[in-house]
Length: 165
Image (cartoon, rainbow, N blue to C red; front, side, top):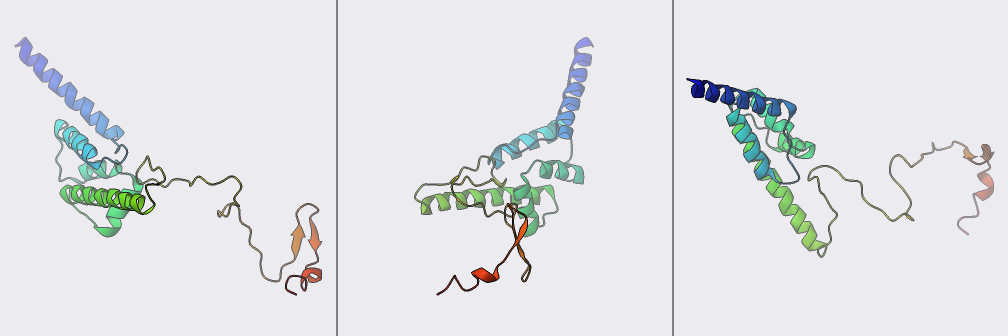
């Protein structure tokens, strides 16, 4: 009787621990969709959850990288767990294929993408001009220009004819 109690108590505790892990969230590591699917399915089975309920599908999709999730949603519109799993595997295979293809076309040089679908900032030469949206300024046609050093108006008419002679 003592061993029966211990076995039941241990099983109950293990189930609670796995459920806590799933509630905390399991994330796909790197680009390995297969390892993620194996891990999440094992945890779902140990927690004694059903695969066909919205909470399980949400748990699975919450662990996918945002870009992968968006691509699946745009292209496939899956409804069931089985459809989500297959779409994730297919999209990740396509991503890895395209990454290898780009590497081959670039002569083996690729930028590093350690997080898979997450956008990365491009490393640039420190001497190049930064043209990102946060660094550019626009001018309204007909507005007067201001010298930032003196904060005074710049007479643009005196430069009008000097560019193309």
